[in-house]
Length: 178
Image (spheres, rainbow, N blue to C red):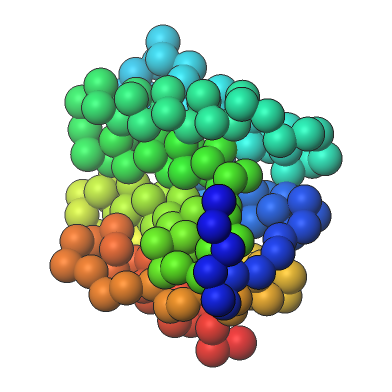
């Protein structure tokens, strides 16, 4: 990997902080997927893999594989809420692979699980955006200073026209204002 100006290092402990933050969000909405696809364990496996890393185990291909599998499970879900919940699980497992590259695209590894979780909750509530906004506020309150410190090393999340991107941008802006 080529090191560009502005790139930086990340410790395993910092990656664990990011993974824990992501999996806490995904855990909140996992049941939305499981109600839709009760026999499909792929998102749960991703959440378990994320917790395994966040709690101190080595980062392995388990996180990558389960992340991809959870995203595949999203395609099999029959509701948009279940799709978003599965994506939150996949994003949580993928958080272990945040790269120390000063690119806004990396912010998704930190915040996209929370944004997908918020979207899943609002869709499960009939599209009530106040529900998603409330989950974003809770995600803000849950953020530890170490997480905000990692986030601030990256450029801000880009503006977006889709709801998940908007939720992620709102969360990003709020966390950076701490």
